[in-house]
Image (tube, rainbow over all chains, first blue to last red; front, side):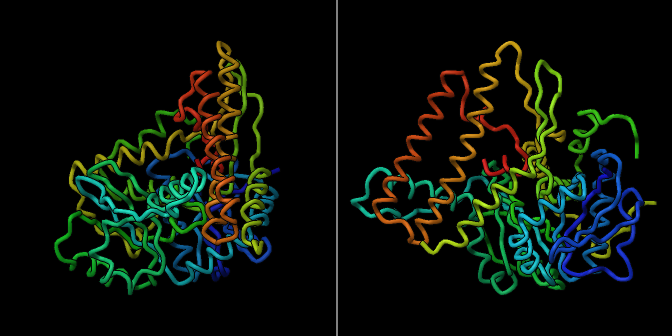
Length: 224
Length: 73
Length: 122
């Protein structure tokens, strides 16, 4: 069976058509339930190179400009149409919710840079008389949470809160790279966002913003 | 697109860059985005034998996640 | 055909050399192996290879259950007794995985066979 290379999930169909893919193959829009998927026929996965990565990104950007909601798919996704349909059907609810979140929006990426991660004092989550099992779960929850937080951004929050629709965090804790923070903003708000980041007062950390990007980081399991 | 087999070195070459825009593209395309494939190659004695489609397992994991959404218990 | 220059191309970010270097190293680490994840039993030590695969899968399931337990705990749908019992069970499971791993010379970091999207939960 022939395989398809998957570029993105779409909320609506691009007009007049989806254009061409990174191998100049004509793109098709396939429907699986309520989801639309932009795919191209390909015999083998593209080699990973600067050229193919940039070409794939260019295709996703073009599709993003042509539709309201787009969920980019990871580079190198080649599979049969029936496998694709199986995967999308199984995850339909989660993917539809993610598509609704990113509608009309795009991503800014912040790199949080400094000498040491911010340490945050945490109140004990478990009641004082909790047994070892409850304390273990409370400690594990604190770890899960900590891995998804960027307390270093606290001074910027008042300036950014009005612009940020959703946030995803990857902690690196490898000085000088402390964390990467991905912010979902309304399309067109990038200049205001940059102004807010650059206009913020003295901060214990350095923050460098790039974007806007299609919302790669807001796919359901996007954070590795 | 070149037809010769991709060697590990070819792919690694993308990291030998000081171009921050390329690093951003790498971050977005290779560590983010919806994952629709999840395949594992199983083998013995250095020989690849079975190409296992994990999309089936993906469904199982999602149903586990899905169950929690209906938690009324 | 060269890819068209994006209309809203990002400005060059001003990362310093050290910062760029650490971003590059982090990405290289996270992207990992670009070829499909592979399990290939080492003929010199088939037992260890099997143990590694089995323990990786069990650890994956343990983390899945742990996340669900935490969600239930936060949603208040676990009684204090259940919270204690599940917490203890997860603790013991974690110790067991570590102990069996140790017997085969496997450290926690070895249980990281990249199972694609499944492996990312680990």
